[in-house]
Length: 465
Image (cartoon, rainbow, N blue to C red; front, side, top):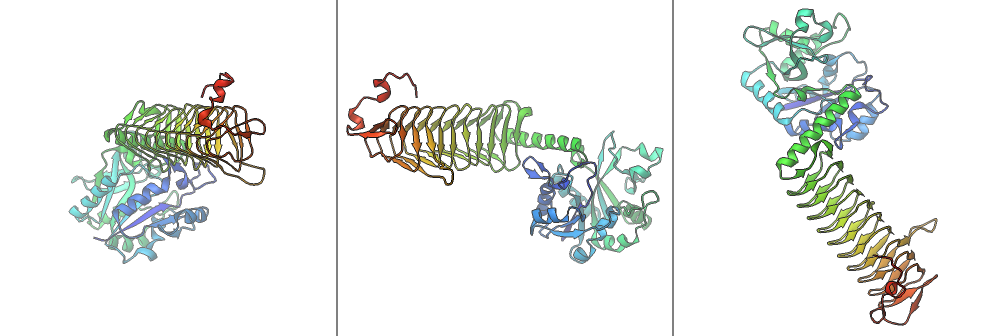
C-alpha cells in the first residue's frame, strides 16, 4: 500500500531555549530532523511533508532543500491542527498516513516496519506505537478495552488520578487509514483546558464508530523519547553514541572504553581497528582495517587507511594512506595528506600539503602549501614560510631531500631531489638536485650532497631528526 509520511516539527521549542530551531541541532554528526527524514525515506518513496512554524520555516527550508515538502502551521493549535494543514498536500495520494516527529531521533526503522505490519494485519483504522515506563514524562495514557484494543488516549494534562496511574503511554507515533484520517480531522473539537486539537481524540472517534484501533508496544522504551530540553538532548546523544559504538564492536572494531568514545553516525571503520579512550570520530570519516586511533584524538571528515597510527592528535579534512602514522600532538589541517608509510611526529602541523611515501617529519615543524617527495626528511623546527601577507605560495621538496633542523623555506621555492640544507638555513631561492645549501640566506655549494658529510654531523650540532 502507498504510504504518506507527515513529520511534525512546528513546536516553538520554548523549553530548549535556542535561537536555532531545535530540530536542526546536531546529534552524533547529524541534525536531529535528519534521523526522522531518514526513516521517512526508508519507509516510503513519496516525499515527506514537514509541518513547521513561522519562526523556524526559513531555517528549516534552507536546510531541507528539496528533500521534503514544507507546510506552515501559522497558529500552534495542537497536533490535530498541525496534521490538518497537510490535507491539501496529501489527501488522495496514499492509502495510509504515518505521523512522525522531528524531535524523536531514537526511533528505529525496524520498529516502524512492525507498526506498519501490525496495521496491515489487523486492518485497523489507527495503529499507535506505545511504551511502558514508570516515569510518564508527560505522555498521554493509553486506555484499553477488555479485548486489549485501544479505546482512548488521554493527554497527561487532562488525565484524572486513575488514568494518570496507567503506565501504558502514547509515543505520538500513529499510522492511519488515510480515508479515516482526512474524513475525521475536520471533526476534532478543541480541548477544554488548552483549546487545542489533538490527534489523540481520533482514537475515541474510531472506538465510538466501532472501527479497530491497535496499539503496538515498542520493545525499547528509549525509542519513544522526545527531546524537549537540553537534558533530553544530552540523554538522546548518549543513547545514539551507545548504539553506534555497539554496532562497530559487533562489526569487529575494538573500543577500549566505549563510554569515552564518540563516533558520529556517518563514520565507517574497518575490522581489527582499535579506538582508544577520549577519541572523537566525526563527520564523513572513514577508517580502514587494523589501525590504531587515540587516545585523546579528534578526526573530522578524514580518510584513514589500513594499519595507520594516530596518537593524541587532531586531524581535519585530511588523508592518511596505509601504514602512515602521526603523533603525539600532531595537527593535520584541511588538505593535508600523509602518503603510504609517511611519519609525522610530535608537535607537527600540516595544511594543504603532502608528505610523500616514506617521508618523515619528526617534530616541531610546519608545512603549509607544500609537496614533499618520497623518502625525504624534514628536520626539527622546519617552517615553510608560505604567506607573504597577501597571498599563499607553494613549496616543493623533491625525493630523498634532507632538510636540516630550523630551516626556513621562504616560498615560492623548489628543492631538487637528493639535496640537503644545513641547520638554521633560510632558503629564499631554488636549490638544484644533489646540492648542499646553508647559511642566511642559504647559498648552494658545488659539492654533490652524496659526496659530502651530513652537515649536522660535521657541526656536531646534536639536533636529532
